[in-house]
Length: 125
Image (cartoon, rainbow, N blue to C red; front, side):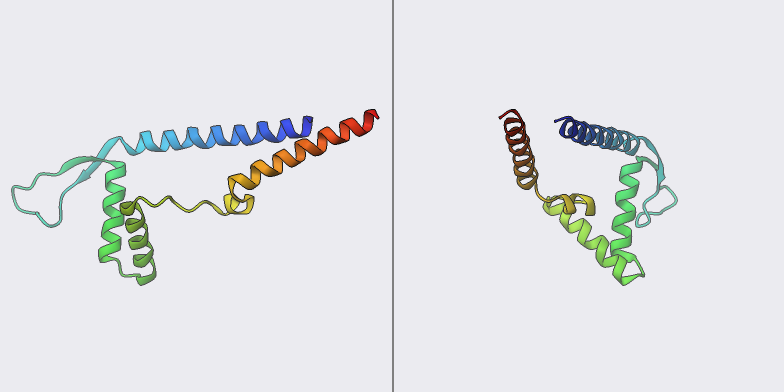
């Protein structure tokens, strides 16, 4: 029981820390600190714009997808853009793939809990 509680606590702490880092990354991405001047409309009267880091990153991704020299990287950027446009969820990390889908995790926890209860009953009898 204590081992299971420790595992659950560790999983919870990891999830909270990942969520916290994600929130900071989003916040920093929304900061308008980047100066952008459109390449296609560079005229004498074109004014640089102040845009967010996230927008600048997205523009860099688009530029690499369209104008990149490395064909393999260009293809990966294009896949990323198409996945985002279509709203497909991002693939999980290798660690998430090793752990398996959520139903498997839930059934594994249930199995462990039932085994622990059976061991407790067997120990009393």
